[in-house]
Amino acid sequence: MKQIPQITKAVIPAAGLGTRFLPATKAQPKEMLPVVDKPAIQYVVEESVDAGLRDILVITGRGKRSIEDHFDRSFELEHYLEIKGRQDELIKVQKIAEMANLHYLRQGSPKGLGDAVSVAKDHTGDDSFAVLLADDLMDPDVGVLRSMLAKHRETGFSVIALKEVLPEEISLYGSVAISRCDFSELVKITSIVEKPSVDEAPSNFAVMGRYVFTPTIYEALKDVAPGKGGELQLTDGISKMLDVEPVYGYCFTNGRYDIGNKLDYLRATLEIALDSADIGTQFAKVLTDLAKKRGLI
Ligand code: UTP
Image (cartoon, rainbow, N blue to C red; front, side, top):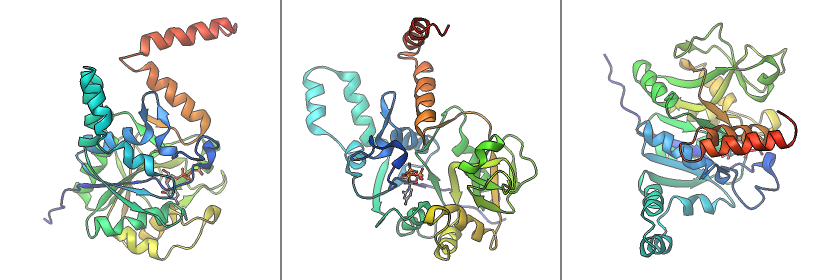
């Protein structure tokens, strides 16, 4: 039997304009917005490292400098923390720069997620690789990416994370044609469409921001024309890949926090704060007090 090589590389596209968070994202990358006490992209880098992928390529663009600074050493800050004896903070700061091998490539202009992924070819070459979007944060205990990598090793083909959403929400996502999808099962995807209307959606199974791709995706993306919103869509690339080789969906149910729009971002921030060992109990009290003060409970 053909041995499927272990994947070692992850790609995090972070070159988008983040217009849903304006004006917060006018001069600051969306991926650097804090969720409790860490920027969103740090959660995603930690998830990648947890899944065994320490070689991480970030696709950046204009105004994304702070991402590189965040994952770099900060000798001045480290020196300050050291002489003040703030050991815990020092360790936290040093860990950020040491946990992974970060690489950066720039997307010329934000022409779409499909275009951003195709930039990664110079780094991943003929290897299969994972893609993580910082719009979705995953509960580390659920281990979606780790399971997807294992499924890739079983099949040798691309694996895409899928979750069932409400019919009225499917127009916000890529939707796939599958009949059913049980937790942690693989299903063969037969077609995929970006942000369909409720009537056009092949199912309520939506593509979430985790992918494992074979290099075939690069060939497929070459043929993609501007699609929904005038952007070069990754979904359209996946659709073309279906003509060449199988693409599987990996279904999961829990442990995803959407932070791609304001309301969900706030909800995710509250949930993650409530679950935090550090401030969870105190924060629950703050929320209860606020709700009482407003006569809501
Ligand atoms: P989104 O569509 O959610 O990000 O893309 P966006 O375009 O920055 O946000 P809005 O819709 O204007 O608010 C998902 C991920 O893909 C990256 C984004 O940075 C985000 O992390 N992306 C998107 C790119 O890297 N390049 C692009 O051309 C588009």
